[in-house]
Length: 182
Image 1 (cartoon, one colour):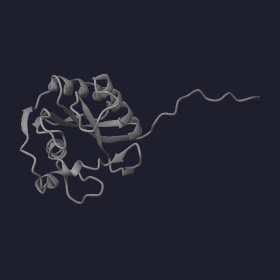
Image 2 (tube, one colour; image 1 turned 90 degrees about the horizontal axis):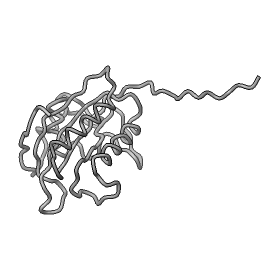
Image 3 (cartoon, rainbow, N blue to C red; image 1 turned 45 degrees about the vertical axis):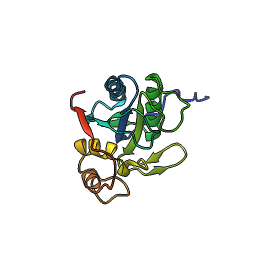
Image 4 (spheres, one colour; image 1 turned 45 degrees about the horizontal axis):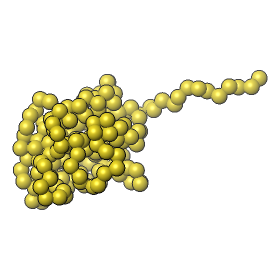
């Protein structure tokens, strides 16, 4: 008897708590964040809480002079699958919300989604780097993240997110809270 190959898809068995930063500085920035958050929420494992920081208005960092200010926020979701799969889905959300696939670094954009961390995983390859390499250096990420996960210890750091924020040497202007309810 010849055995037929299985047509079942392999199902991931791990739920990772994943942090995602959201940013927008083109068009209706708050609408773009809301639309991205809704799409990200659909990627989340429904047995896990979805955490959302307030939205902050922030000055552009590393951008050309005259670049419009950003609205930034951070979400944390439970994702049932591997971080690379989540990164692929985040790229699809960016494209669906009008961000061109090919673009210059730090160009203005309708939406920017970065995978910040996945539990305590450390990954470094051509596709993905976890935790995000500049996470601990950016007030526009640390401040919203400290709102939802102040005690979080990131891989490679001995200090909590709130401690990293308090010790951050930066010349970034203070963030301005836009809304908690979005």
